[in-house]
Image (cartoon, rainbow, N blue to C red; front, side):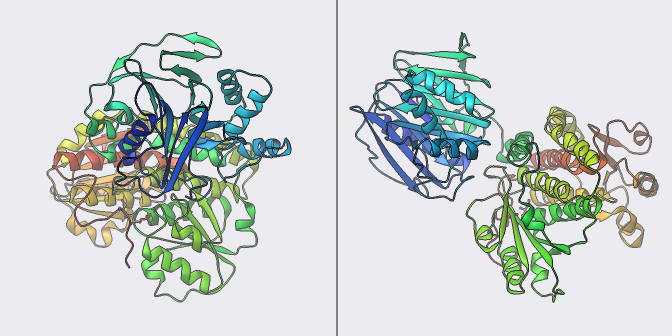
Length: 593
Ligand code: AGP
């Protein structure tokens, strides 16, 4: 996720910007840049890679400036695509976090009007739009406001003009905080950026803009000045990097609603904006992946077979490399949040060699998977720091729903209903996050066990697999995911009072059979936690604990149940004192076979 900073005051803005950017490094980035205004000129420095150890960073020390850490979303990581971006004459500089969803049409219009673009980014339309308003005689701040009115999507951006002593920033659906010092002011996407200088902040809300000079600031909404109180941040810098959360994993679980929103924003306009040529003429689909991404594939299989009637196979990437798949018009889909998992890359290479069309679904722009594949669909989760995949899994699922809906052969009305329900998922996930205390208190009962079983049927089965993986990797409890119908073919031997079972019970055609399985499990004295639909009044009679999740179309339950299970795993691991963000023996990106 990009990090933005702005400074105006009495210090050297280049030094403030670089130190603020260092404080945002934890957000993850692939390139960075700083711009200052001095003597009526803008001076810019951009770089690919980490800020690293640069000593004595200096652009000449102007007192107003911007900085940016970029997590590439539109255009590969490169110096040209790094922010700040400038207008044609290099007089206006902008840093931005978010997605401008209408940038293509804006860019086309601006190019027709004679603007020359240098980068592949969505952001670059912003300085050009500001420039076009300034050229029509608008004051700089008014030009920024008018520009914001033309943008669709999500954004927090800060603009600076070479001969203007003000920074102007606007927020809409991306975070932006104003830091208030004595004779100096800071703008940033996150508090740690400014905490070294001030702990007095004003949180901007959607639709608000702020005009800041060294003498003060004005906050506006719809052109009208608004009064906002200054708040005191009680965090240390370390706390603040995690946004006040104890662990990155918890922070990332809390980002799930936004991740679904951003992914929908990117691909779901009036239509599903995924290139239909990816799927043209295919006979079947083969998913290859590892770990959590493999579980996303299993859910993808269910969705695509259910909604589109296209046959789907799912293989562990590491096993696909030993198989001899029949050649056909198969679309091979590699899902990998990092885009660097060695086994998945190898499977994609093999598929290419066999002449199959390859699609990568990944969270990392410019990663190896994107270079191997014929087509790429990006998830919009932002960087994930915790080793356990949480928000990237939810983003992968969101993309899979959109793909299944895109290639569906169901009546358009049914698909429209499903998409509308998908749009309501962020709010439902927020309701689950509000149940955090309840889930944490259930986890207290289970933190002392050494074995657990997760079961489900139909779409509940991959939910169970992923729930078990989350628990085992961060809490070190041995956890198995099983199809509930398979219990009696072996795992029953393991059940008993020392082996609790998490039952993922979905209100669909599997419901009655699952209820039967739960009774069988209870008969063997295993404590049972059900993850169930909130309207399910029956389930509580048969289980020991219930995590009630807001109702949705059963096919969408992976998006809600999985978040509840992420929280459950998190709280169990926390009680066991585990190193949650960096579990033993595991790496975030597994680049060896
Ligand atoms: C998930 O929590 C894991 N840490 C791991 O299973 C991961 O999903 C797997 O290594 C695949 O990674 P990828 O999505 O980056 O390819």
